[in-house]
Image (cartoon, rainbow, N blue to C red; front, side):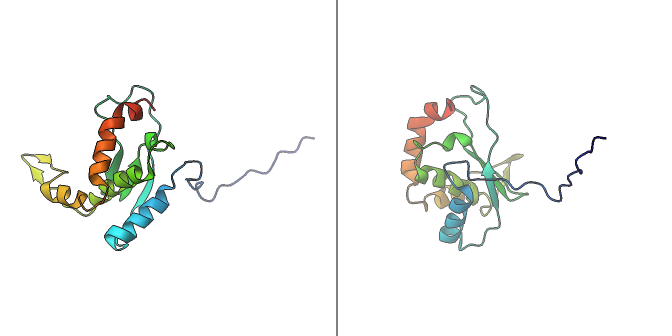
Length: 145
């Protein structure tokens, strides 16, 4: 008589592990939250799903998204390479965090995410200009990941 193994019951979904990635996004988020937002933001972060080669248009790679309603940030896994500087990843996370604190007005029926107020807040990140330069000069390499 064959015996069946007892049925496993999962009581909670498995926790997402950030350890397989080079950059520890929750640690980056926590450090930026403390430094620039006095620890006031209640937000989670994860990597986006991997995209197939060629899915992003060369000029339109999305480095991060912020779901304001869910208070969740997702970062493109193309940034998870040793050749991508940590400060650049931090600049993308900081940018997405700003979407949680800067109002998003609707102008002529469209949301205006990057208002002058938003642009001024971006300038508070010390390496903002360098990050813009680095992105422009590495966009093709990021798109090919």
